[in-house]
Length: 343
Ligand code: TLP
Image (cartoon, rainbow, N blue to C red):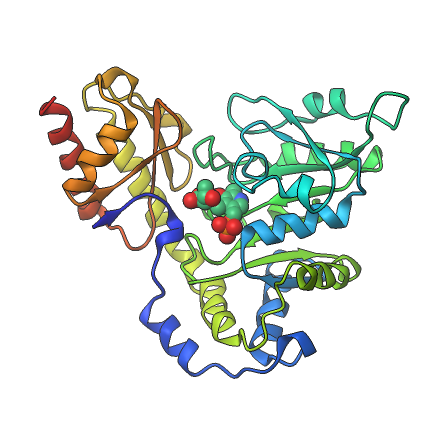
């Protein structure tokens, strides 16, 4: 199977499996797992924050971050296609007791000029704003990257208004690779950042939440409350360390494959793609001109050994990663060409 459904499907490398087998472990709830401690330290150094916390999932990392930055009854400002809003089972409401104030954007990238208009204090009718959340790269906008000056402007506006900023940086290493900048430059101004080891970086499990030592110490307690105290999870952290140290340099290959895939898909009858929007490893394409439904295309592709899912009734998403090389991308294009021509 050529699996382009997501970069979450990456399998651990042979080196990761060997590191997992040999990992030194201890009970992490007592703070005694040396491999997790090393991963948390390396992650904090890499992103330039005081401390970092190993969490089982990106969803848990975002959930803890929002809880750290808000009180019950506040609003969290984010883009209207944010993962936080559409794909995390309303954890903002469930765990933090907040509602989302969503701002529609063309490209997934919020600007301070838009955020400023919805920021408000507690009033007789209005809930106060608790924090701002930005997603970098933006998944459902097709892996779009926040320009550094936009992040700086949002953070300075938010901080002047007394508001913290959390970055859902599930794929911030993709942004860094595409920009040729270290992650620490991208996240320098945000208060917390969550990034995933288990997506394009290839670890089997795990994400990191980074911020001040004080926030991360409190975050550790929220992680326990959420059932995320993981004991001898150094076996996972060992793969995570390799994901952190070794995988970032492979990402530009995924980006080149995504651009190539997009340019080939664009040649197919009825497929529409904005090539200039392909900045990292996510290719979102519109199939409404093909005369077929998303579900039919997905099913026909599957029967030809290719997995690509729809994200709504007219768009599909293909995500490149290290388990899908250029030849596999070519086979996926050929399969889709065949599906469309058998129409
Ligand atoms: N994204 C998954 C699905 O949930 C859509 C994917 O296949 O892309 N933030 C962002 C921006 C994400 O893309 C994801 C996962 C998460 C958070 C959550 O990470 P996990 O799945 O580890 O909870």
